[in-house]
Image (tube, rainbow over all chains, first blue to last red):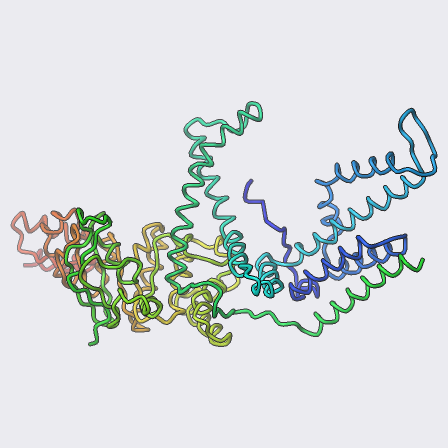
Length: 266
Length: 279
């Protein structure tokens, strides 16, 4: 059961979107968010939607998968909508004691909901089409200039890589410990929340102890393989920008500019 | 032949006032190209010795030289580790990356080699352990034996002259053990890499050119497998067993049968018994 958890939810593929440089995809996601938050009026939102539909269709990610990502956030979406409908001042359409529904409120709620849906689906497209290791590489390279102000960029990305590497190992370990405790009569499934949380401590303590031991061994093994930080380190796969990367970046910049400008013009 | 590892009166204690010594004035010399097994009971000091050969531990007294380099010299530490690679017991705790080839590339990346050279070394290393078809796999999808082979490839990619393996088969099933043992033997025969295999498995040790038996931090016996396993009583006093075939011949000899004790493999033992029965 725990095996099914995959961080970042990457779905391998070989489409143009999958093959793009992770740096370009990260910047594109950032531009998309900028466009979405500066969007005003139906044309700007329409452009963002068009952008999302285009990229999704090229990436061949199934529409059902995109919508699945929205499910856990359904409550927040509805909550935002209700709040906006009732608490925006303006031309009153309907009044019920202290609640007023305004024309502006409905419009604002509609835009907010569209904005959240576009935001979630758009950004999840990034993790659907980029492997975690590519993402960490991309982040490391994008943050590289920050090294000048002593931000430990390489160390952070190495930590992310190792964390990703150890997720399946630690999940397996958790299952083993849980089974061992169950075999000795531990009960994880019944009782109130507090009781269940308490029942987890005999799982968490051995898990932490073993994680520390693993970390220790890994550190020695890494030193034995000549690791001494990011200084002077080269890479097996050097990321390099192709023509497709530049075109995609230009495409995203145009869309962002259009989305921002359209709000001003219309 | 040139010597690759040399210890002189090597002494080590885990406590700072040296109450208990893990290694007691150990002096050994290992020539390049040899396949050496280090046998010993728990607490005999065999892992401690292995960690000295890679400068993970530094001597409390005496000295340890790797290809003539003193492990106490801090400026030589990377050269020492590049010359003598180390493989540990648990493959899960020495694999760094989420893709096999990225993991094998870890050491060459740290060495700052150009991209083409890294690619060449990764392919070569994976080929030498027979894992070339798993380049793009995720390590956690592999079996224990395969993971350990990836770990060995990760060390080979440094092009070391010597590999120290600290109980590499202890966590593996019998198939995984065979995989590792044949990989080690092929690295020794075909690539001329010196192998130091720390183990407590008699059958693995029997495959080596030379066995060092450690007991309580001292060298008990040093010789070829046949010479070592003939000392059945000494081995037993150190808490070690001998291969089952030798055990059988030993028991027969005790009963007065004139058999030699050098049947380390099943067919050798059968030959000895056959000759005995014919006579």
